[in-house]
Length: 612
Image 1 (cartoon, rainbow, N blue to C red):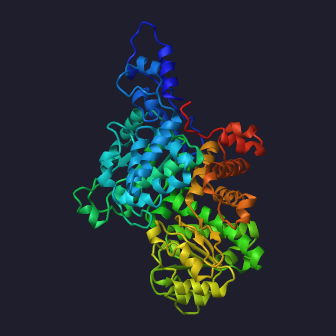
Image 2 (spheres, rainbow, N blue to C red; image 1 turned 180 degrees about the vertical axis):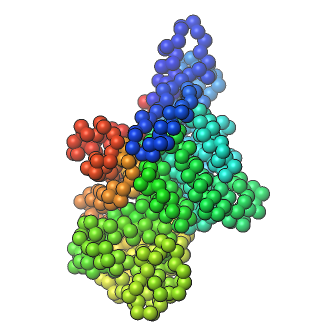
Image 3 (cartoon, rainbow, N blue to C red; image 1 turned 30 degrees about the vertical axis):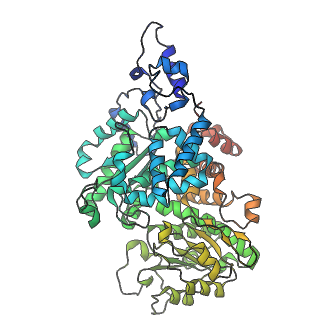
């Protein structure tokens, strides 16, 4: 609803001779109907924490602000005639002007800053620009630019948000006794009940390490992609950073760092604090979907293990990355089987990097091999060779392995240890090489050349973000493999022109943006008791099958980014279908919807940025 309509609604209900001031303008508040299956004790408590929510003031709301597009008669009724330029803009003209300005900015960070300011002044104009130019703006609002924005966040934060604009929660350990009050205050100020939160503690931001509070743009950026990519209502998103301290010495000594300048707490304090935060959130917002983002590997696995079956949540670094890479690999496996006669059973996959993302990807691929292709657990597990900073992860290496590495530790190395990636490649002779190490250039020319000697079509996925941390570039891979590589990266790389033929080859990008928006939207719509492994697998397969005939003919592994909303609708519909099939959806209405209607059902519930 536009500012015009929202204001007119209130004014039309008032007495003709009553002088209405903008502070009395109201909007209907979005609410949730709590289900009875997820964390029931907390949901019962939620009834004790109901607070009246003040009406939204559309005149001072970034969401309802029409800016220079506000009609003249409404300016008069709102008593702002003469306080803004007289010209009445169209939405399209506003977008053209904003696009001209952002393109005039010299650096990506300047563009990011302008877009952040636009979002906090005219939310729907912000999303119109992104949706109309998604391929141009996705790298600005998220990777790779968000990495620099995180590093500079304490410097730029004071200049991004107008005073009094709620833009997320910054929670410290000292806030724990006051969480219910803090959340109630946020709800009062925002006037909304969120459907989804992205929560980070900033301990492992992209490939940049522990950034503490400066990791907040990750939560914000992810939620912006939920809105742009899947039509989640921006009013119902909640970014959260758990500012529990930082072990980054630079931040601890930086006078401009805005976070808590203390070392991070021990595990007991950490897990207890997160538990208190989650309980308070569920009491206030019973149907809230929680996405855990960029926690340290140990904490990422620990939180997922603790809460996956207890509440509506998932970890994008583990499950989202796993699903989107599985989707690309499904199409890569199909491609090499069709063109090079390599059956699925012959694949050997080397992971360079052994953090939460790598293990999450391996788990997703393994589950796919077991459920869809009938491999036993042991057969599927033997496909994977995990490498960390010390080399190939083996059971007899002599060091104490982190818990999440133990499962994939090799027992068939016959006492020999392999340290360098070149030696590991020669030993394993893999068909597929996946990088999640944040080690720039780790896939050297010799490594890529050896992959090309072993395979007619080597599958190479350097997935580390941002681009400065990628294991190799698309150009590196094309040159070293004589243009034979089947490639996907975690960040965008430019197209490569084959010198001999002038053929333009496009790199695949295994961006989580293809997965988490649709997964989140489907979960919001179906409200399953939990996001199960079957739901994640179904979402990955839906993404793999979403390519058009032309995209497959082009040799692509992922769909064109400009189709992201259609792709997200496909993924969301698959999530809904799986939740209903498994009888874990808590939405009664879905029982009367036919499976072939899920896609339209989803699309009808996708938010759009129009003023009307």
